[in-house]
Amino acid sequence: MSFYTALSGLQGAQSEMAAISNNIANVSTNGFKKSATQFADVIASTSTSSPTQIVGSGTVVKSVRQQFGQGGFTQTDSALDVAISGDGFFVVKGSGAGNSVSYTRNGSFQVDASRTVVDGQGNALQVYPVDSTGSVAASGLGATTSLKLPATSGTPVATSKVALSVDLSANATIPSEAAEGSTAFDRTDPSTYNNSTQTTIYDASGNALTMTSYFVRDTAPTEADASSSWSVYSFVGDQQLSTATGDAVSLTFDASGTLTAPTTATALTGFTPAGATTEQPLTLDFGTATNQAGSVFSVDAKSQDGKTVGQFQSVAIADDGTVTATFSNGDTQALGKVVLANFANPAGLRQLGDSSWAATGISGDPQLAQPGDAGTGALMSGAIEQSNVDITEELVALIAAQRNFQANAKALDTASQLSQTIFNIRS
Image (cartoon, rainbow, N blue to C red; front, side):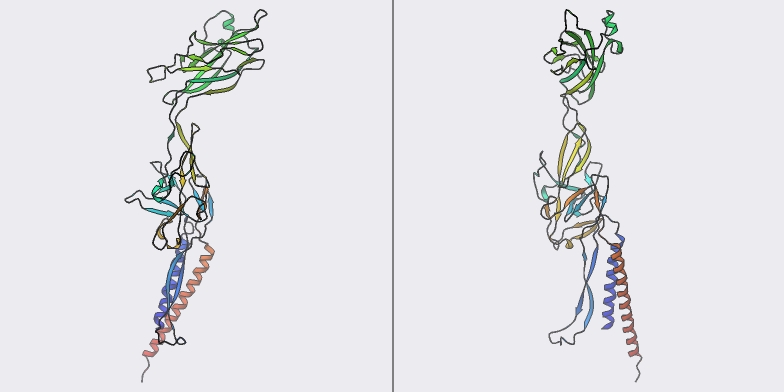
């Protein structure tokens, strides 16, 4: 009997050393949770056995129980590195047959070729769909979707109105060419104009184009007429724009420098985008803030009503799990809210490897929630949860397990010697 009792101790100590060795081996595995070996004594007795004379029959490994304590955090510079501060698991779904669902604490995510956010095994991170305000539109495991980062946002809008608010210098002189009687304005010759400014506009396809406006002083105040006038020539690329009355928009100022004409936006013609068959209508509006003062030329405000398609620039994940994408045209878009799962008995989860688990009857069904709700933790973007293995604690436990193994081996050797002694007894 003692032989098998010692053997059970050997097997138990060996199992414990195997669990500890696995913990130590995964001390640097992100999201790894250590395991602890739990033992139970074995008693063989009957209803007639005296409780004062029962001798145990050894030990048995009752379970290798997972320990889901919090691991430390490592800061990173990736917005898709996310750690859970508290309870819960990320929900990920495979792309293979059946789209199997698994759960992980390793929040090191990346973007695959299809722009889906996946873990290291290619499983897609699951999020709840949200509306335009960022509120969850549907819940439940069946409502979750794989998080994808869109490449673009919005639809292009052709520019139809350009608004400029400028300060023209009252001290500006009439260009020398104009003073000598020349009628030719040449945008390649700076001596034929006083100032210029550029505005980015868009065609119907969202292509960015540059509209350049050149300011030419035509008249200065005199004793007979205190007003002054300017001509504004506009070009889009090499195409010169025209008004209903000529090639330029005429600006008139009174003696105080207040703009008196035009009082409304001026229609411009002559711009046909590349690939288009018709002209794109434009208007140029100088508003009421444009004036002529003693200061140097400056642009106070500039705007246009066109819009290009936004190109994806960045993504951010908030503490509450809201995933927001930012685009080059200034758009922001809520892509979803990260789903977290909790379990009544996390120790009952089946380990799949790669810091992933699957639900079992022992763990119970997953209880899905948003970060911070229903007992789940908050999210920390730009961080990864480390293994919860304490290397010092494991090394001490390994020494203790090794001593237990040696002690049981000694008991086994002693039992063998006793048996040999009995075999050697002679009458």
